[in-house]
Image 1 (tube, helix red, strand yellow):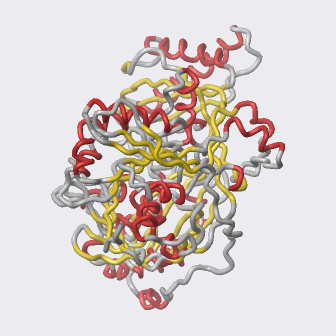
Image 2: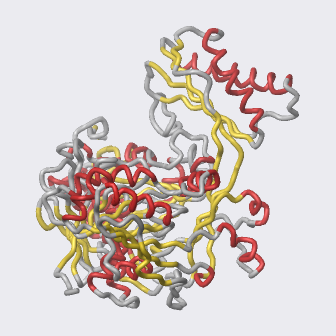
Image 3: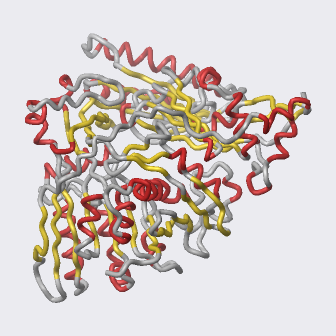
Length: 634
């Protein structure tokens, strides 16, 4: 194979349930593509797939992938676009069989690579006997008391097995648990023949994968300045145009919705970020504080300059375990005096629930309960000035290890409709009880989980597929890398950038005027990437927005510590707010269990700035006119 000058890798999905037509739009788009990556898996998804496979040995993969591919597989093969996806779930072999069934129906020649070996569920007892403690890598908690509740356990593979599979020229690569970034890096490793110790190049591939892994979030979706997006209809999912030296351009198909700029790319880079200088993957540790972003042309941003270092010899393990049940019900309550009505409803309901549980013979009330007044500060919890709500969606939620208690809850809630204050609308029948599947992240030595690669081929007219390649237990290189960092990031922005503004007239603004932001979750921790609208705005944020100030602002939401990391190259600060999501994931009873609204809460906070700071923001980076963009002189 001759080395290409560049390759284009597109994304067509950031989670199971993403736009089902994104794959079609990417394939039929105006630019020639080489690869399409699609991400289907999350921790909860893995446990669902394990349950499906337990009931049906042929299940356990993302069936939606097959239905999305059905109408466009011929065009995909015709255009020679390779698809790399983790749609294989916990049963990639069965997913491959479904693909071959589809190919037979359409009389197509198809080659599929399958990567497995990440599923370590049945190996956990032996691994523990061999000294793998599976200690929670975020909390330090001991695994022993959770071992008998485990539903699924998967090691995160990196790009190496995918790159190895691509040497066999498959049309589709099906993976189980593989890093979201790895499926993008793998295509670059294969096409440009990168060595496994070319860490700077590998780091570029990881960053490219991070930018596109969440679908349209890099191309206008979830963007602070959403008014700048010309259209959200037929939004163009992101594409990276990658070069041999590692540099790449972020873009999208012409004549599609969405919006790509340095701002949208910065926001996505900060999404779900931990320690910026140590973005850890099985292939490389990427230093996000080294990323250089420059505008190239409309809807096209260049990314380069990324530094990487050798990875650790550990693999992250994603474990999901049974953690009881939860149930949530809602009532619509209208004014006048809507907040007082809603509070009365909640008070009466919790008293009645406690009474009914005692009458039913339970010795204790529910373990966890939560009340939220949706439409009246349910996500920001008292951080902001109050307003007069017109109606409230009263949301009552409980979680307990005893499902029978939740049955009392679900039957009692509808009875409130006719036995409380006036002005109640019904949202449905009795609420449903759902299982809680909690997330347990751990680490294990890489030698205990080695990937298997098998390539299958089925030619036109054949009734069965054949194995054309098999490599079992692909060995990982031993690198002895460390995630520890011994120096702060390089910060070229001198305080003198704003020192001359000290005589400027002070004005009070919301942070939205001088910053944009994106937030996400890591377990029970929220990350908020706060990005200056100019280098001067970044310097002002650096000097004034401390972890203590953020902790004070979020005191009603954040129950743990707040950590602050500077990302000067992105004009950004990354804040990590621990214990902010009520446990996070399905364990959480909060309406925003993934911290998506935290960035908007931070941007609402008011600060006093020198008026001349606003003049440093170029027109395309200015905040859009709206609720928060109005100023009053002090």
